[in-house]
Image (cartoon, rainbow, N blue to C red; front, side):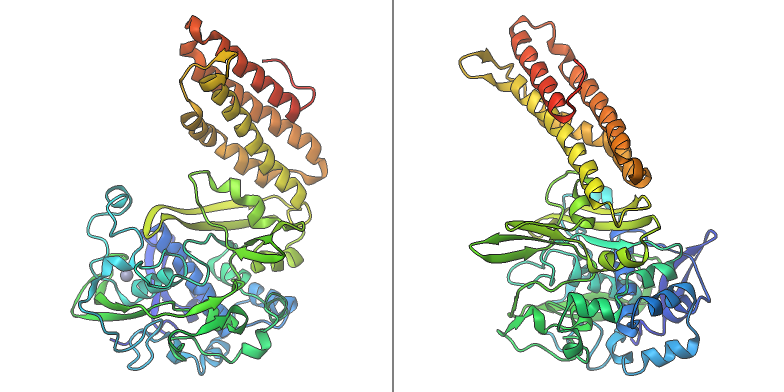
Length: 498
Ligand SMILES: [Zn+2]
């Protein structure tokens, strides 16, 4: 089965109600347009990441001006064909020697069913309600390529000694959303100038091949600073080999009929990457311990909503103990989207080891001025969290009281009420980030705080309503109210009484 990501029509789009697949050339040359469309949100996000990676590998605009030109105008078919020269073998899913993100001749005792390549499908916990029945028995070339890329970049490792992605287990991915799909691809491509600045080893490594063409030796130690841009973007951490079916079938992911893969062989091999590879689509956070800087990629570790992560995803900060730096594509956008608002696509998995607990794929808008007013964005998030903490603290005191002074009610409402707080503030937080007028930010923050406070008061009253008639709990309730009032005063000195 021959299938090439550079020439075949594999990109699933929806345009004016109709679905079709288009090629990379049609997309970049502006011959076809539409929105990406796959039944699974995580596959759709992985597809977009793969499209951006291919665009980056084929083209690296010299500077901001050259990138601006690509964003503005579709390229010609000649330019596209020229860029593909020498790289056709990198993207051939059925290549006899060096198939895309695979190794030929992988030895495994038995083939693994295709559903293992789709994160979360094979484990029982979220299967029933997240995935339509029958998904992932067979995948067409396009969906198989997306799934391979997703497993290599975004998923927990296959477990049992299999290496995970260069970004760790389940990193948060952040992309800039353009007005069209074509524009989105370019907005997430680094210029040569930017690549040099985030990877000082860019020039020295730019001729490197992907590791499925130029293999790593087993048990080697590889400094992250020896991994070039293209090699890192297409990094395959494990050995996989797709197994084509003898028969045509419907793809269980996109539904198209044709040649499919219905299993794969996998094998682990050992190596160590030392240090952190600065992925273009990831923020990084670091702490300094005993003079050593430890970096990592943020991920969704709790059920707290995505907005709670926003400041570390888009605001740079550092002191001598810790810090955060936004994704290189966002750093780059700061220099040429200063006067615009920006729309971000943020996604990733939340996992417990090899088990995927949750998938996220969300859109966020940041108001005009976002690039220069990180401190205000930070304040919005801080306030959103502070009111939640005030509520939790009060409910905690209601539950446990104060030792030897006030008996607690013994009713712990912290977690369920926190969940409702997050639900009720979700739109408010999105809207604040999208619509804040930075030049009048103090007024706007005051208004936001007032709204958050009203929500907290309402939630507190509702949560404790049924206990107001319990004489034994009255003292605990009064204590909780005092705590809430004190927190409000700290957040807003002229706070009103409850
Ligand atoms: Zn498919």
